[in-house]
Amino acid sequence: MSLDGFVAGPDQSVENPLGVGGTQLHAWAFPLAVWRRPHGMRGGAVTASTPVVEEALANIGATIMGRNMFGGHPGPWDAEHPWNGWWGKEPPFHHPVFVLTHHARAPLELDGGTTFWFVTDGIESALEKARVASGGRDVALAGGANAAQQYLAAGLVDEMEINFVPILLGRGERLLEHLGDSPPRLELLRVVPAVGVTHLKYRVGPDPSS
Amino acid sequence: MSLDGFVAGPDQSVENPLGVGGTQLHAWAFPLAVWRRPHGMRGGAVTASTPVVEEALANIGATIMGRNMFGGHPGPWDAEHPWNGWWGKEPPFHHPVFVLTHHARAPLELDGGTTFWFVTDGIESALEKARVASGGRDVALAGGANAAQQYLAAGLVDEMEINFVPILLGRGERLLEHLGDSPPRLELLRVVPAVGVTHLKYRVGPDPSS
Image 1: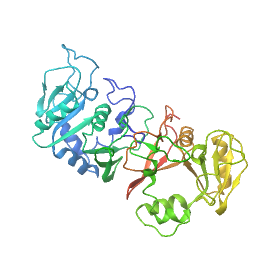
Image 2: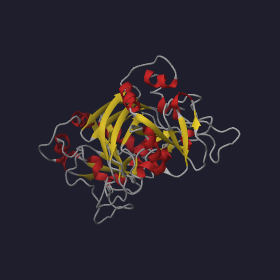
Image 3: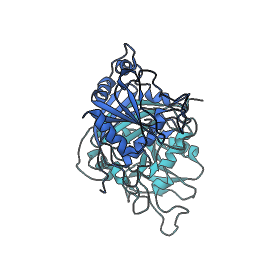
Image 4: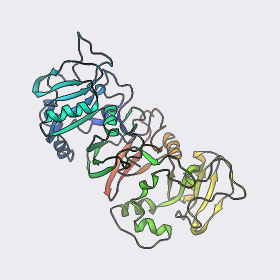
């Protein structure tokens, strides 16, 4: 997330999935060995971010993401040339991924253990399906902003890791808005200053009025 | 600043200057000896925040603030019962303070070395006056959000200290918006995790397109 609260730049598109300037939000991760390995690349750096990324990945059994993060053009799926995500034949998840969408679609099984399931009956249903699929491990909410806001506003988030990057984007997709009149209570669990990023981990409580 | 980017809560008023929930943004500071002393109180705690506050206050020769931060009802000053700020007879500044306003007013000299000067000819003029008055020391921009945005968008800020608090306000005054299409470039100078706050200090550069 940028200092001004954006998790993607403006004008996201198939050609520019993170929006204008959005790639800067992830620049801290690309040189890391711990990022390169699940993307099928060797080598890379070890920094203070390494244990943070290892911890975040260690116990994930399933991932949830919004349709916008899965990508492709909005609306119904193209039956002849369906969009299969940004991640190629072997996505870096290596576990079941549940995509929130208004448009039904058969599961998409790719290499390396990643199957995308398309969930059309809402965020609670996707969470329940992901919990079952995770086999008792953690369920990660990958994004984007809209999906995160829905889960936060519904009180369904336990923990939140903010990778806080010292840039101002000025415009884009803001993560923390539309949270309702009683946003969740936070507790800061730890701060890790690293190269090009500060990792802030929060416990997310119920909203204070409940 | 809250995790969702607010530096004051909603519905600011004379009775509730920081808006609903806004006092939580400063709760980390109130117990500190280094905060209590300039407010005329003895005792208090010493934490990792102490050197940060000491450093921030050490070399300030003048302060600039917006009319909303100085407070009182908007519009022309009440000639019979003029608003004299939130800070009582001896404000904690102890140096000249320049208030951005559309409404001319004679300087207000209070105890302990604080004189409020009311500047009606714009942010550059206020900065120039503050520079002269500072005698070569630093000029602090105290806030609020609107004044900070004007100085940031004009490229007139060198450094920025964000006291980042683990709360979500949901609504209020956002610090980092209206920054134009080419917001300033940042460099993170240091991170200090402390009790109830994370202090993030940035160098603010010219906008990347200039």
